[in-house]
Image (cartoon, rainbow, N blue to C red; front, side):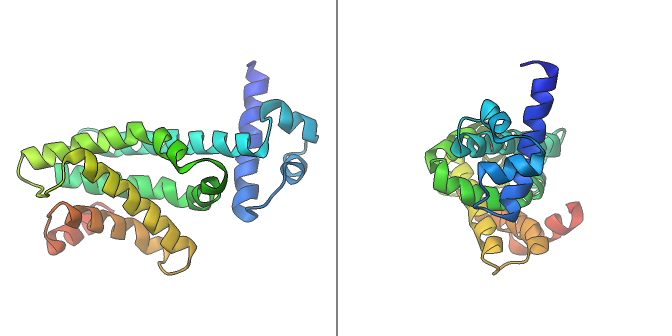
Length: 197
């Protein structure tokens, strides 16, 4: 794509995300109007609404991966790395939580999990380091714990969507819960989450 076409695509995606978060049933026509373009322009970049949502999920997965990588860079303590990872990922995921709920209707759950594979692998490495160093304790292998962490995030996103958990509490709750799931005592998990948030 040319620079202008890339810029148009990015602009349409940004506006589509805002529209879909405002109205999960927003049509391609509504998105085109909000973007100030004709519907044909939106379809030139995204052949269907599902393709647009899929592109938004791809973008969200890349953003989550970058946030996690930045959060744990240079952190040697696995507990701190896990907590920082959860807090950083929550900051990004919170902005996309309604999109993830919407995407589960049009993008397969398997597709979402596939897109998050790089994030899961990096998290599994943190978890393995904590298990190897004796900082974490679990009957589950690190790879399985990475899936547990991912589902914890999805569960908290849904809890916020359903109004049973305040968004401002969810990031810290995610970090504390993830640490406790790997055997970090509750008081230490809470203290760590408060210290780094």
